[in-house]
Structure formats: structure tokens, C-alpha cells
Length: 425
Image (cartoon, rainbow, N blue to C red):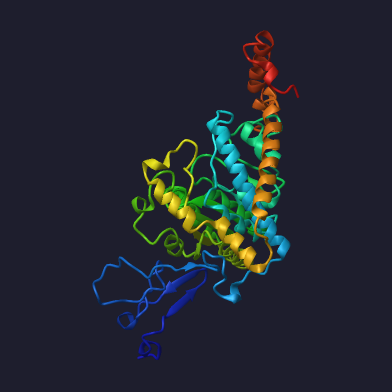
């Protein structure tokens, strides 16, 4: 008997040109599965169905009082960087309050707030400015951190003539080429496979950049989630998948959505490096995203971050969350673990923020938001010609004909089409 047959722990692999073959000799002595679909599995002689594995822990840097639990994980950021991040959290909060009320007054058609999820800004702070962002709905804080102006937010929500999207999208469907932020689309999870494809292109270019894709746990129930993650894993795409698990999707509690260990366990199932973090701890998010980016760009592989948080707001202005949870539950969560209060406490512990500064910054932020809001409201709608642009390099004759017909109708019935409300150029 050969030496190899005497060593049951060893696997015997025979190579032939262009083909990998697995030997079947000494089969009874092997302890490792040799089937190509499960090479890391051990043989077992126990008939057992696996229903539970150890729950994935949740990484945390600071407690709800803003105290860092392990000094080795204290974020290495400057005073100015930390204050900028916190100010953006306050500006986001002020903008959400104004635009939510504006929708209720009928001045804009739709809005979604980030109340309770402001710590997401920490992920933006950990990225390179050229990393491509694929957002879902609640990533306004990422744009703020990247330099999107209040005027740009307001112009988009009003779909006016200065809207970068030329009035073609619902409010909060932001996008900006300059800040490497792909335009948001309404259908759930479409951005997940797109982020994998863009990341694969970045890998081929070799520019040491990655994509980051944000989505909620509700979107993880869509088929695109599974297709995107499997694509990213098998192709080795430098993409960070960031799941905001806020507990309720649109209106469905997580207990009614899945029975497994959250969304993080699915990443492991696809062979993706995965971490679960406290999504209300901005420094846990910052550290995890920074480490995830290094893995993505240096090893050309995807990473999944599941951020555990709580949606304090309604899902959107089209939702009434009191239909599926109590107001007391929401109030208790907001008092017990508010990401803004937590960040402020950390700054105060460092001596980088004075008590009472919040009121001044929030007042200034609200005034700036209202000023941008008033200016956007006065602007005209985009020019009608934009209906025919940005699809074809050269407009085909069929569309040219439609364009001429519309121009003739508008010219003939200017009052009916309210042409004065549209920009001329």
C-alpha cells in the first residue's frame, strides 16, 4: 500500500493538462469531502440536520454614553474631522425636519428621513472620494459628507431647472457624477448587481478603488441581492455591501422577513468576508468600513457589513408606522440609543464640543436649509427639451418628429401647458 493511502487526512489530487482530477483511491479513509462543490467539509457518520450556528457578534467601539470601550479602537481622527462629521449629522437632521414638513404641506411630492440612522455618515468618512457609491434611499448623509450642497438637495427635491437630474426623478433620488454617486432608482435592490459590475471594472483597471452599495434588510429579500453577492464573490469584485438593518424594511418587522441570523449570515454563505456592527455607533461603522475598504482594494474581494440600527422615522411620507409598531416603542428607542446624542457625548468626553453648541449649530443649519429651500422653490421647472435628451447620442428621426409635435402644441396652447412655469433654455 502506498504511503498516501496510509495517511487518511491527506487528499490526493492528480493533475492533467487543463484539467483538475480528484483521485477516488483510499476513499474510505478520507475525512475531507472531495466533491468540488464542498471542499472544506468533513465527513460525518451522524445523521444530523444543521439548523443553528453560533450567532455573529456585533462590533462596537463606544457605548451609548459615548465612552470608548477599548482604547485600541479609539478612532484616529482629528478634532476638525470629528466636528465636521458631527455637524453633518446635525445638518442632515435639520434638513429632514424641514423637507418632511414641506411634503406634508404639499410643497414637494415625497420625502424620506434618516431619523435614527444618522451614524451612516461614518461610512462615508472612511471612503476614498473616488470610490463609487450605489445608494438606495437613506444615504443623504453620505452625500453631505462628500460635499453635496443644500442647494443641490433642494433643487433635486423640487425637480427644478437646476436639478442635476433634470426633473426626471422623484424627490430624494439624488445622483452626482462629480461626487461619484450613482443616481438612485426606485426599484429595490437593482443597485446590488450593478455595484458588483462596476467593481469588477475597477478591478480590471487596477486603480485601487472600490464601490460601496447601500441597501436595507428588506432589499435583501429581493433576487438581485443573491445574484449580486454571488457575482461579487465568484468574480472577486472590490465592493463593500452595506446593509442598514433597521428592523422594519418598508413596513414588515424583521421577524416576519427571515428566520436566519440576520443578513450577515448570508454573506458567509456566499463566501464573503462579513462583519456585523452597531449601526448607531458612528466609530464602529467608520472602523468597519475602513477595514472593509482595505480588504476590497488590496485583495480584490467583496465585503459585507450589516449595520444594526433602528428606523425612528416612518419609512417615508407615504407610510404611517403606527400601523405596525407602537409610538412608545419608537420614543423609547430614540431616548435609549440616539446616534446623534452618542456622538455628541464622545466629542464632549474628548473636550472637542462645548455644551450648548448644538443649539447654535442646529439653528444655523435650519436657517441655511430654509434659505436653500426658498431659493429652490422659486426656480422654474426644467426646459421641455430635456424630455428628449440623454438617451441617444444622436436623437433619432422618430423622436425628432415627436419633439416637433410637442413644440407645436405648446406654442399653440401656451396657457394650457403652463409654459411660463418651464425654463426656456
